[in-house]
Amino acid sequence: NAGVTQTPKFQVLKTGQSMTLQCAQDMNHEYMSWYRQDPGMGLRLIHYSVGAGITDQGEVPNGYNVSRSTTEDFPLRLLSAAPSQTSVYFCASSYSKGIGTQETQYFGPGTRLLVL
Amino acid sequence: TQLLEQSPQFLSIQEGENLTVYCNSSSVFSSLQWYRQEPGEGPVLLVTVVTGGEVKKLKRLTFQFGDARKDSSLHITAAQPGDTGLYLCAGERGSQGNLIFGKGTKLSVKP
Image 1 (tube, chains in turn yellow, blue):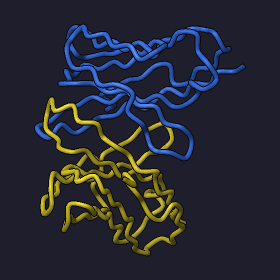
Image 2 (image 1 turned 180 degrees about the vertical axis):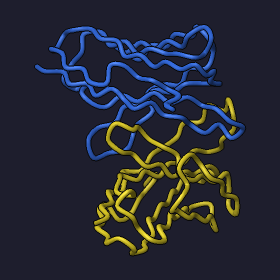
Image 3 (image 1 turned 180 degrees about the horizontal axis):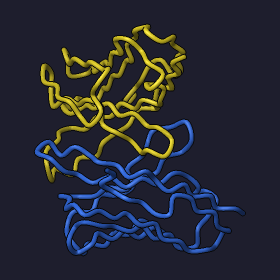
């Protein structure tokens, strides 16, 4: 198993450009999520999905869109990049999610994004 | 408002010393997880604690969940340079069990 993979590893964008951060998992996990990690802020949840066709907003969803057409893939779209979106983005997945399920969440290696 | 407060934010110690990292909240969590993250990589789960008062041990690491399920601690005995990294606590809340992360404790263990 490759686990959780993310592409690209690094990206530089200009303000206003759009891009898609890719995330894929080969563990047949139902739950997938996107976080951003900023210095001194910890990880903050952007969007999550509990299964194909189902997505919901996390703590900091503004400026980002997601879709979940397959179990394996969960892309994150920046429609019009802003310098405030400079961050490290992590995708994570687990078999299922629900309060108290205690499922292990597996994180990808991250995408480092710089918006100029 | 930061729901989970971690302390200390930075910790630099010598090999062989003991240390404790704290994770505190005014909110109750159904479970709490501890992760370790190395530079350039994603967080890796160390442990999940669920029951108030629960204590779990992972070799030299001891994790405790507070009786009221609002706080947790991570104690490392005889720290080694390989323990160096960012330690994150995360509380599970909400109907979907989403995680709320603390800001992390950056540990450096010098040989």
